[in-house]
Each structure stands twice: as structure tokens, then as C-alpha cells.
Image (cartoon, rainbow, N blue to C red; front, side, top):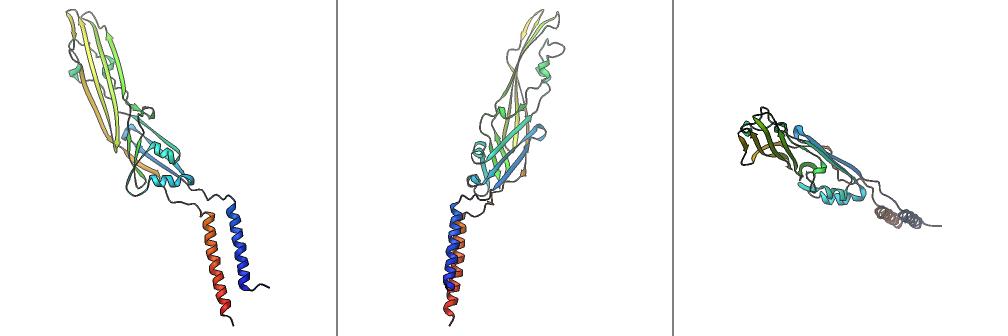
Length: 266
């Protein structure tokens, strides 16, 4: 018959074999899963959002990307390399002006300026206008800044009219360059207009000797919101090897205590 220490030793051996058998089978830790979502607005001109998911198999990578405290700048491509289901989109329907200053109207101009004099050009940008990788600025894992490099919207118009006998023809060449700059917490839309005209009359032709230019600017603030914060604390369970070590340690302490107790008996 086995004495108490031998019984404990047998129980210990059985427990070790059971745990090792468990470890030999593929065991998947409980999945860590987090959804992060952020929004931003360009005052009354539109806005956008950024969202992504973090799973247990890329948690270490994204923890490294956001390691430490303070401000972190992360590109869209970097996020895509460590997170899943990354989605980014924005829409800017921007400032449009309503015509040229009166000083732009030429001598012998027709009674009503041509339509293009009254139309603000394209002030709309989407992802299709991106020319480089967007950069996001995070502070304590919350979105606080955005940098976008966008291509220029350019509109060109050639216009002619024949208003009457005294004004035989009015011709204009009109080019508009429309730019949007998004840097940090502000945006700026800048419009440059280049305009040249000629008027044919009964007494001759008048052409503006230089290209007339005019610029328009609108600057505003970008407001950021954290709709679903980024959490980087792992929720996964201990690996089987860790469970084995804990089990052996606990059984060893029980065995030692029982052996000492047996030796103390008369």
C-alpha cells in the first residue's frame, strides 16, 4: 500500500501528464478583438472618418506602433500593415466665390458679364484626389490631427459672345486653380483665378495686355472626435505552457507540505 507521500507523487505525475497532454493539442487563446473609430469635420464643408480592428494575432505589432505616451504620427499604410478592416474616407465640399471684383470688368464689356464670371469652380475633394499617404496624429490613442496632400482642381473656360453692332465680340480666357491644404488641426482652401479678355468694337479691338489674377482663401478648424477609443490591453488567456508551470509549482508546494507533515509524526 502506498504511503501518503507516494500517493501525492502519483497524483502529481498524473496531473503533469494530463497538462502535457492538453498542451500537445492545439489550443487557441481567447481572441482579443477591439474596434477603434474616429471622426472629423471641416466645419460646414464636410468631414470623414477612420476605423480599424485589432485582433490577437496583430496586437503586439499595433502596441509597438503606438508604444509610449504622448503624440504619435501613423500613416494609413502603417495602420493597414498591423490592423484589419481599415477604412478611411472623407468629403470636402468647399468654399465657392460669387464673381470678380468690379475692377475686373473691362472697358466695352457687354451689359452682363459672361456666366463664368459668376461661377466658383470645383471645391470638392474625396479620396480620389489623394496624392500621398495620409498621416494621422494620435495623442493618448485619440485622433487629434490629420495631414492630407491633395491634387489641384483646375478649370478652364473659353467664352465668346456677340452682343450687338457696337460690340462685335467679347472673348475671354479663364483658368481657375483650386487647392485644399489639410495640415494638423486646420484646413485652407486657396483659389487662384487667371483671366484675360478682348473686346471687338466698330472702332477697333481692345485686349487686356496682361493676365488679370485674383485669389480667394478660406481657413477653418478641423474638429476631431473619438467615437470608439483604441484599447491596447490584452484580454487573451494564459498559454498552456504558463498553465503547466503554475500547476507544477502548486503541486510541488502541496507535496513538500505533506512530506514535512509525515516526517513530524512519531
